[in-house]
Image (cartoon, rainbow, N blue to C red; front, side, top):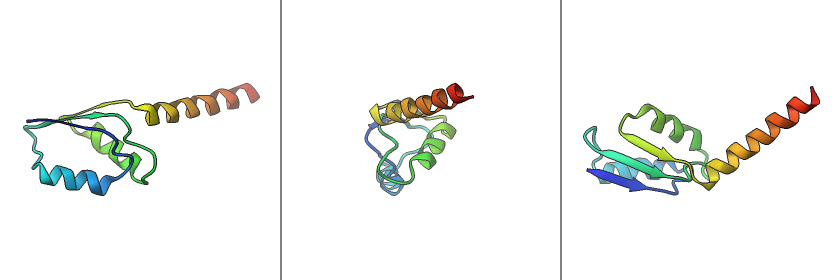
Length: 82
């Protein structure tokens, strides 16, 4: 079965509950269409879980893009001070 979800926002417990409800298995595939991070505190753990799973595909959302933009800004600012 193919599943699609978005706007997880760091809520690992809710994601795990959803996976139990749909009885997600190794034969299934989950597409995550953005906004895994922000708000909830488990965003990094969810990203690690997704990266380790061969049957999950994630697209970046605006919250991930914001994080990357902010990280790039701080990297650039620190390199200019050197």
